[in-house]
Amino acid sequence: MINGALAAIAAAMAINLVGCASTAPVTGSTHNAVNTEVTSVQYGRIEDIQQVATAPNYAAGALIGGALGLLVTANHSGASQVAGTVAGAGLGALVAKETAGSAEKFTVRLVNNSTMDIVTENQDIQLGDCVAVEQRQHVNIRRVSSVMCSTPASDPAYHSMNNSVLQESAQCQEAKLELLNATTADQTDIGYKKMRAFCES
Figure 1 (cartoon, rainbow, N blue to C red):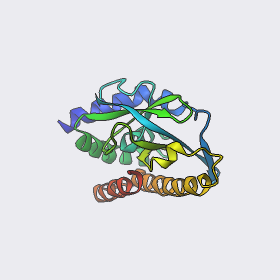
Figure 2: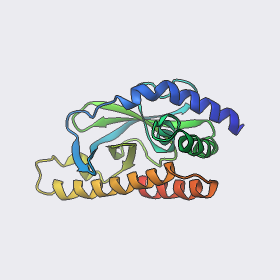
Figure 3: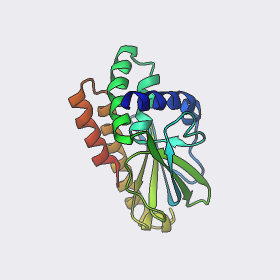
Figure 4: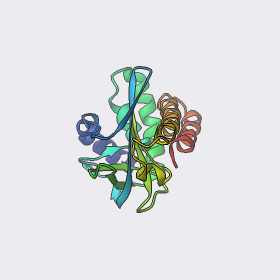
């Protein structure tokens, strides 16, 4: 069962790679330069939630977050073919086990009134929740205070509140890199738990 789910996920990742990598942040995002990389954080409310089977083309037109998004990097990174193969195998088996062949597709109505779709796994997010969509090397979606969806960037309180989200986003990115670099089953299991702790709401 896991091998079949893993094969379906791998096929879907290959189809969706180009669209995911070329997605640009929309107008109204907040950027923070860290280690020459840019974190884009956009706020919005969950407008729709769909459960999708991880079959080919399941995330067409959507960003891919969570361990599903990391699997794209593990399977297609040009940095180290051997390391990528090892990480991809362990991570792929874990993703297949955790998702059981399905994931959630969240449609977010951003504060600038545009929408975007994010596909990820294991997120306790509900309709109407205010969320932060974080884009750096990897994509993440997390529930945040509703204040972030109702406070304009011009408000004196916005800067400090947004900086807090950016700090959490940086910790999430570090946890994802640790998981991506795991080469044993134990490291993958620990890394996955840390990713969930730092990246979910």
